[in-house]
Image 1 (cartoon, rainbow, N blue to C red):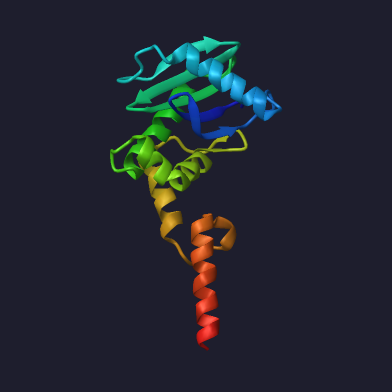
Image 2: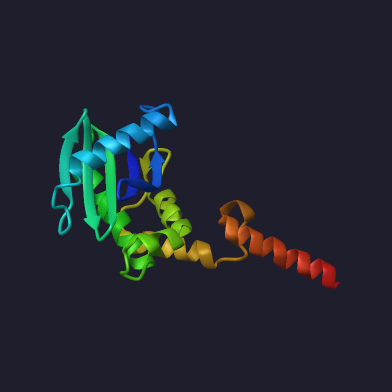
Length: 171
């Protein structure tokens, strides 16, 4: 699977995950993202996801307010599967941001969005496409303080470490 999951705001990436080595350098990735953005920015993908083929890559994309969501795959990938990944990701983000899907909310909740990406695809393998289930898994991660440190976000890990330090100092 050669998928890439990308969220853009006004042509600048907010969150991205690459699952292939087609673009080995950061400059190559940025050039590809700029190319995709400029080719799709004038389309009307606000009500439904759109599909296009650019440079032997299938691009599935959807725009909401000032955010642009993209899922890409190689030309041999199934468009319906890629579309279900995009829809699941979009549904999960919409639930997590309480239907307020815009740049400010996305940046304030970037940790949840990145967890969504991790719950959907792992190492290029699609794990889940059901938006409500993805959102549930992400919120259970963010609420579970007893989870192992390796499964906590950085903020949660700091809170856990601070709690443990406070307990040891008060003993």
